[in-house]
Amino acid sequence: MATRVLDQEEFEELARTGYRINEALRLECVEGRVVEQPLPDGPPSR
Image 1: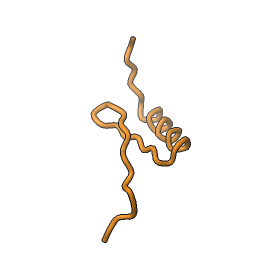
Image 2: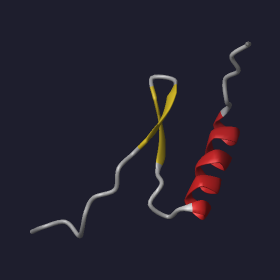
Image 3: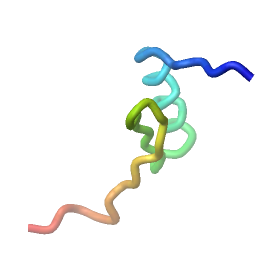
Image 4: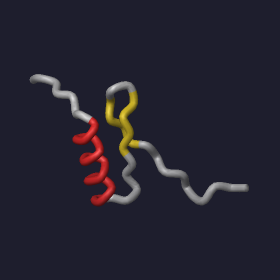
């Protein structure tokens, strides 16, 4: 199985599609891997 690298535009489209499916889903590219970025539980404390 060949590995294919997403370009910037493809990654951004993937992230937008994931967000439309579930607003809690945040994707991030870390060291060439796509990972889910957890959302904070609530508003920032002061």
